Image (cartoon, rainbow, N blue to C red):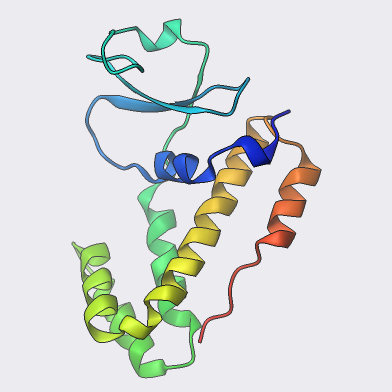
Length: 156
């Protein structure tokens, strides 16, 4: 089992959120908890190509984009200013929803940015914890302690 204190959860959350479509993979070393970035051209060290199946690392597959989208929808629905919520929710319809949501938030409601970031970050970290647990890299007690120590923030 890995010690959560030695794992960079931000790197795992980046890997879980990576929706790009070019030839690369995020990988985790199950012995150390270190995250590596692999490409077919440059391997994991940036210089030496290596086949991914030659590495003793665990692929970190991205979580579907609709999960991250739902975070935005939950945020828009979750705070007390109904007018702001309606504007943010309206921004989430159609193509380019994430870009419009960000624009609406930053331009129309900059006072809500810190609340959005706090909610987004806690949810992303919890997903990283769930992923580590699903991979058998941490135990249930560590996951439960993390969840208890990192509650989802209250929205204004």
